[in-house]
Length: 367
Length: 139
Image (cartoon, rainbow over all chains, first blue to last red; front, side, top):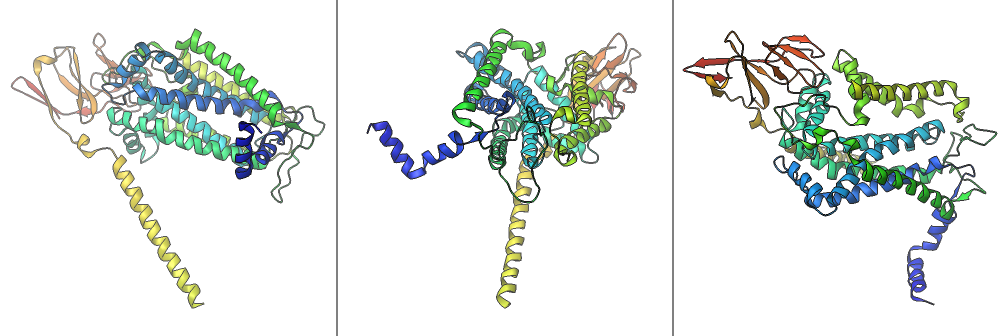
């Protein structure tokens, strides 16, 4: 018996590796009609890991001090070997993470995978989406540029429209009346410790729910596309005669990750400044708001909505209502049908919602 | 029965102690994170009157916020909060038009802080000033 096999046997006897591999990998069967959209979750796991690694590398040189933050980022970009690559991967990766999260949510929506018994999968995923937006917002301030400073000013100011406690909430969030050094300290702590820990915990919960309920059957290529789950007791949705996760679907996951990497590195190498307007290269000046300050592309619909409503409170209330509706969708849409073409009301709402979201984004960009 | 009621009583006591400890912990965390009080103290700020020539504006920090001092063309000196009442951006002084413009969403204010156009819901906050012996004291 060679050494590797002996080590394997030693571990196997103690933790039951073989049984675990059989249960969770080679014997873990997926629906026969599974498609490429099911690999979005794996891509997102890969992105999160990349963000953690590049974030740790940035922490080596980044200084979370209002007087030094911009200089430290400039130092990373210009003087540290491959610092530009690490920073670009982190900045581009954060945008890609939001983009992929949107694709993941859309695939779940259109394939009806949020329906019973997967309400908790949807809710944990929805919270993860909001945490991703939060980690992007808090990370945006850290370079302490004009863009970061004023985008954060506008974003935090929106909280002020909450009745009664709004002004205090803004001050609490900023650590002062205006965005300043205390805000940087708070956002840094949120960005590198609090939100990543919450995201890791929520990813764990999301995967646990997935493991307990089983992968949902996509509604394509089947005669019966209704949700056959019965609301009487816990049932694991197994797929007898299905495709093994390993090596079959794991290979699809790897292929999808490779395609994502091509896209990601294409942006990072050939058009890295696509997400950086000129104000991102000017140090923050609390006395001068630059003209035409805009938030990141994924906050543009929120920004434009705020501009559309005469009252800021109304603008926020509409967004809160839309997000609450989305969060509670599995409890509102109780229909059995999963095929998008057999759900006309859903299709009208979903396509209409996407068109409005994109229109607000484009409008916000050019307004 | 007696054992049961004793257990219940002890359970309630334990719950109370845990709730108290939890409340204490939350209060401590809140106190740690709450904005520092000393940054909110109003302190008067003084400038030589020559710092603000006619038609010009001077931006400075007052009461933890950005403020602006302007001398109108008729010689009147006015101090206002420079924080736009819409979303908190800092307004810019348009010397030729004698009005403020918010670069974020195009809000316009008069030299006395009144809303002239755009989304701001309220005028700019006015700050009291006093002029004596060639010195302008704000606040």
